[in-house]
Structure formats: structure tokens, C-alpha cells
Length: 314
Image 1 (cartoon, rainbow, N blue to C red):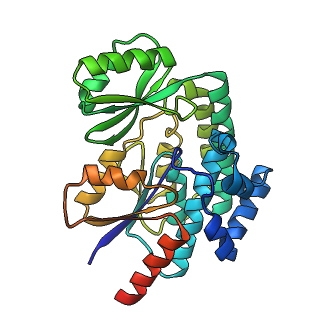
Image 2: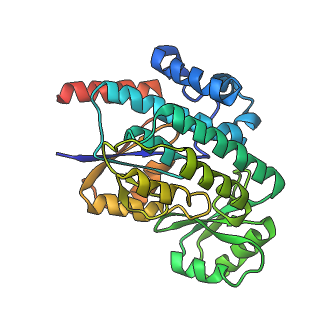
């Protein structure tokens, strides 16, 4: 019997047309988009389905779009009796994971994501920065080299054994990429995400979100543990989760350690819930076990195939 984890994507998984087929099929999905649009003050569905792409790529729109897409699919799975043993989300995706676990309501998480995305967009506009993927160099070696670079640059994501994301000021990130290549990195690649996430350039929005989480966000009982980006450990207590979630924007995303901890706890099936396939690729690089099942549900077709296979195996 497989132990299953739902994993939820974050920013950079969006695409024009996302969730359009699900919206057409399910009233529940239309309801989620309607509630989100009321909270955001703009038509989220129109931006997801039509674009323009430049608008969808903006942090203020991207984060709500990915969140609603993920939560809508998870809700349909829940209606069909599909529940995981644990969950995790990559950065923004952590809010989707908390909704999945019943720790946050859709409305309260959507309010938080609306504030998070708006304030992070302001930091992107006021403090231009960038991110870069570093391939084929050890985490510890990267961290050591970054310490000696002047300017703002730090590790933002520990995604897999061969992929670390750095973030910071453009000049500092460029210098870091050159030094890391010289130190043996197989490849470095700038990521067009619009900002320096999980770096000190986000300190203002990080502070706003920390206060909001501690003062306004109410957690309910968890149905299953959610693995924290900050600690990579499973948590199912609201007060404990507030402590780590309030540090999330200013801390590195410990994705690889989270996946390994899940696998070590007996998780042998990972299902990415939401747009894209980024997390499936990271799990494949992180868990070299041919018995582990790695799959994803993004489109209506994905969902229908998954539910059909579940019905056949029941």
C-alpha cells in the first residue's frame, strides 16, 4: 500500500490557459475563481485563461493563479475520496498544502496569498533583483562561495542534489554565477521570475507577512502533517506552523531535504497538484528509487485519467 504525498507548485509554474478546462467542467472551480476575484479585486479567471502573458507573469497575479489552480484540483480529488498522508508546497505552494490539510480555509489562505503577492510585487518593483539556477555543485560549496561576494546574494532554494537556486542583486548574482562556474558548476542559468525571492531584497514584504501570519491567520486542526519549507520537517500544529511560515519569505526553501524526509518516513508516491511538472522533475532527481510513483494532475484530462484509474483499482 502506497503512502502518498501531495506536493504543490509555486511561482514559475503558471501558463496562459491554466485551469480553463477545469473551470468549464466544474462549478466548484468556478466558485473558487469567483471568491478569489472578489478578494483580489480583479478577474483572475480572465488573466489565467487569456492573459496577457506579461500580466500573468507578474508576482501579484502569478501567485493567486497558481494557488487557486492547485486548490481547485485538490478539492475535486477530496470530493472523490482521494486524500494524502502528508503534503508539502514549494514556497507559495505551502499555502495550498495547508488548505489541503484543513489547517487553513480557502478564504483565509486566499487573503494571505493576496497580501503576499501584492507586497512581494512592490519589493520586486522597488528592489530589482534576479535568481539563477546552479547545476552540479554541492550546497555547502555554493554557500561558502556566496559568503565572500559583496552585495546581496544568497541561496534561495535547495531543490535537488544537483540544483540550487541563488537570489539577490543582479550584479551580485552575475558575479556569483561566474565564480561558481569556476568552482566546478556544470551550468548556471538566470531564471526570469521578476524578483529576488527568498533574499533580503524581500525583507519589507517578509516583515509584513510575518506580522499578518502571527496576528491574523487562524489555523485549524491538521488532517495530516505538512512539511515546512523552513525546517523541512512535518508539522501538524497551528502554533508551531505560524513560527515557520512567518519566516518563509526570508528563508531558503529546503525542498530537497523535505522530499528526502518524506521518503524516509515511508512516502512512496508523490502527486504534484497544480500547473506544470517542475516538482515531478525535482522528485525524480532527489529519490533514486524505481518503486516510487511520481505523477501530476494539472489539466482536466490529467484529472479524469487519474480518477478513472482510481475507480478501476478500487
